[in-house]
Image 1 (spheres, helix red, strand yellow):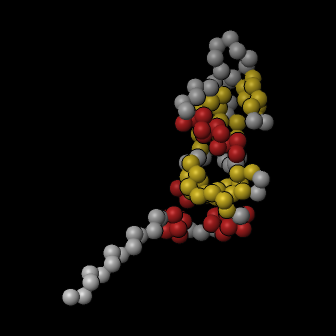
Image 2 (tube, rainbow, N blue to C red; image 1 turned 135 degrees about the vertical axis):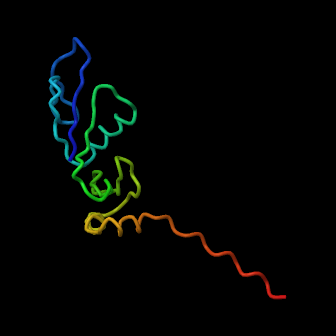
Image 3 (cartoon, rainbow, N blue to C red; image 1 turned 90 degrees about the horizontal axis):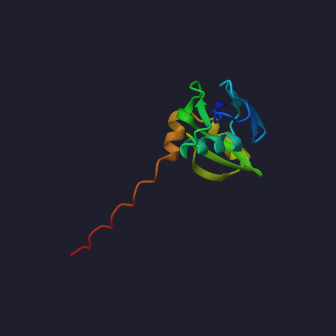
Length: 122
């Protein structure tokens, strides 16, 4: 869950609705749950969109790494709004989210390169 705040340009309406969430110009944040909409707001932040800010909940654990539903039955492992692994089933996503921080980090480490072949015997 994160809080998204709308910052309108002067002279524009004081309220807007985007992706099904209503925002007012008073600066009151709107809570947006994890999912496709929150990822789009995070993408706006990356593109330096001046109209929305995203304050991710600091109480979330796992260093922001969790599997979330991306729509149409697809799940992805995300960290800070960036997809790390895609194409997971719901069961795989739930299993990933049940793991400890250390287990998650271990799973996401790139595999070690293969050992070089042994030199030929003389």
